Length: 51
Image (tube, rainbow, N blue to C red):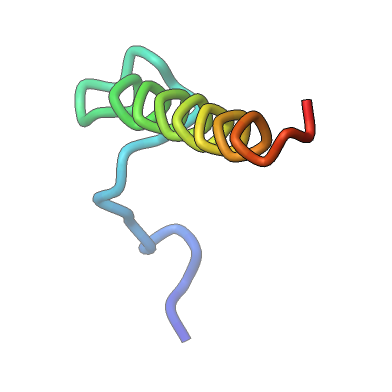
């Protein structure tokens, strides 16, 4: 088993918006994805006459 002090990750830290490896980009993609899903759900509800 690896010791915790020797474990490293190449993934961007999503909690740091100033992360040069893409933390801000990951948050922006997440926000766009949520808005897209909400838009699709709203469109389906509108087409089905739920609203």
